[in-house]
Length: 178
Image (cartoon, rainbow, N blue to C red):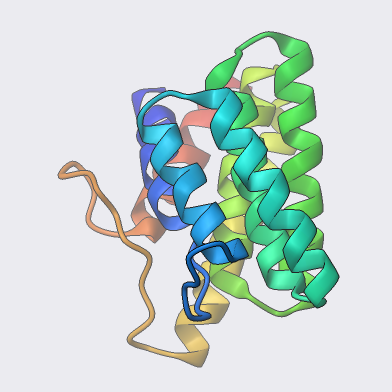
């Protein structure tokens, strides 16, 4: 169970990373600011900035940017309120992010969003869905690794070496709880 919570930290840091140039008032800057506000535990401002970034990305036709925003909004929802209703809303946001990541074939984003949604499903006692998402996260990660052997997702935890190891542990923990 403790490894499931370690996954949260990994997903928080690996989930949102856009590649376009930062502009002072652009969507990338808004998203970066939202991430900073999360670190400050300022949920309302973080969510406002993420939604504002999503609106701009959407107008620009940047589906990956919109996916990053949905992922971040789901994370904000999960971190700010652990009520079952909020967790369900977070699942909806992660589901939208996953769909857009898959549509744009951005495997690392999909892997992290699947892992985060797997954790959410675990918390709302939908362990079969949790297990499925962890397996999908592992599959996305392995596919990305197959396409680019140097591919990795950052792990900010000294107890595990790789994202793959963290997901394998999470799968094991969910299987034990079934």
